[in-house]
Image (spheres, rainbow, N blue to C red):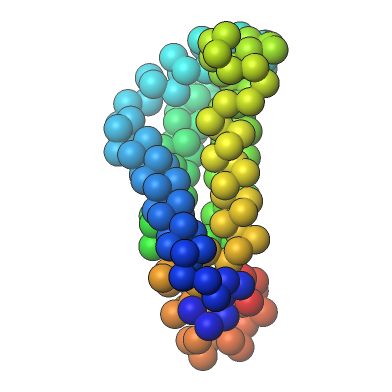
Length: 165
């Protein structure tokens, strides 16, 4: 924890809580839709503003691959955030997924319903993930700090970047 950017106990608490809560959102999405490849197709077919893009994916032969990537992407991102391992590596993928969901829910200028004008929870979660990456959240009660101290990680520039050294 000494390598983390935060020395304030309250901020460390907020970092851990936000990291675990956002991780749970991804993990629950993976658990909830596990094995339901039709879910992704239905989701893509119901898009509005960017329907020419997402609707075409719903009908494409790539749908099984897309379903697999969504399902296991959610799982890996959730596990990464909850454990605090490879947060800076999984964070960009999580942000991209949230931005894709933001556009998929869009009925411009509303998001999902008239209560959300331009901004919704997907953008907020993406911003939280970016903040967690900046604050090196994996070092705050997470496994990135443990991994960073391993000799193999310290010798490898690629592994050092993955844990945010």
